[in-house]
Amino acid sequence: MWRLSPWTAIAARVLPRGIGSVACYSKTVKGHSNPLYSPDNLLDIATGFHKRNVQAVYLDLPARFTIPVDDTEFPAHLRGATVDMAQFRHRLKTQNISSSVVDQLNAMNFVWKPRQHRWNLNIMALKTFVSEYGHAVVPQNFVVPEDSPKWPKESWGLRLGLFVKSARATEDKLTSTRIQQLEKLGFVWDVNSTWQLRVDAMAHFKTLHGHLRIPSTFEVPERKSWPQEMWNLKLGHIVKNARGRQNTIPSHRVEQLTQLGFEWKLK
Image (cartoon, rainbow, N blue to C red; front, top):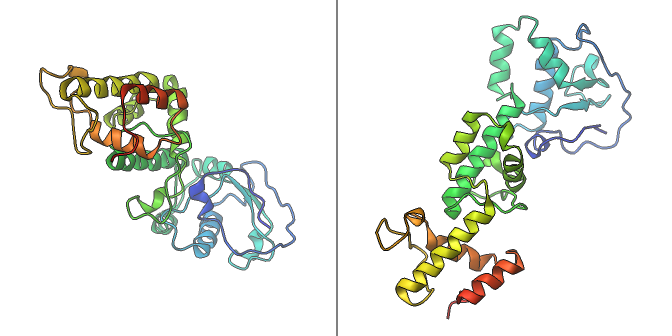
């Protein structure tokens, strides 16, 4: 069977499927001088993966894997080899790779820079989340639904909630470019302060209108009757989303909204 180290959900859709239990021998190769790590072998390995899943949008190879000894999609000299992609990428920096090999890899949408690629996929998914829900406060357990036409195919199965949590935790390590990418989408660094702003906006709506039956299309207008920090807040969408997530919102927040007079079920 394939012996793999943990890697992303995207790569999981690239791995060969339907492979039964087979005897694999370890032909692990160390050192950058080993002939395994050649451009031609990389092309053969990528081609083998591509044949296994031609429907994959991108060819994102796992960080480390062992090729089954009886898998005929791969040349005989590669079967049974344990491949470390970090070794491959390091080796390719020090040797010439022909334009023909590059073109063939690009034709399969081979991922040259996995970390940047996965960042880009998560940003794409976050853009879709904002478009769908009207905000960038992604629940920690949120996973991009699969087979949904609302989401780009290449983002299906991404653990977007964990990506957002990680981004908050590593803000001081992010480049200014990445921080700008997130903030252009309305990324929320402090979830608690954002929640309170929303509650305050609901309370202000109630003060102005005497109720909390906020239309789903309501957006806070740029008027003096509203605090400037609330302008353009898609309050109607926020309220609609809260009703649909009553069972997942922390209990103290549910109580906070209930005391405000929030109607969880419209009559």
